Length: 130
Image (cartoon, rainbow, N blue to C red):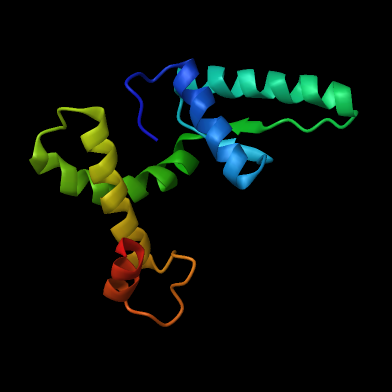
C-alpha cells in the first residue's frame, strides 16, 4: 500500500486493510518507526474497546526487533533493484500500478498465486491479465 505520507493515519489505513483481508494477528514485526508504533497502538486501543463490549481481550503484540525486520525487508531488494534505474515516480498512481505489476510477477515466480499448481509462470500471468 502506498501513501503520500508515512504517518499514523497511513499506518492505521494499512493495518485496517490488512486485518480486514487476513484477520487480526497475534504479533507483528515492524521497524523502529514511530509512525508504525503509533498506528498499531491506535488499533490496539480500538481492539480493547471492542473487547470490552464483547468480553474477549486480544491485543496485537508489537515486536520492534531489528534482526527479525531485516528478514522481511530483504524481500524488497528485488523491487528496489528494478525501480532504482527509473529514478523515482512522478505520481502516486503510476508508482502504485508499476509496483503492483512487479509484485504480481514476483509472486507468480515464487508460486504464491492461488492456482499456481502445475501451470507455468507465463500461463498464470496471462490468466490474470485476461
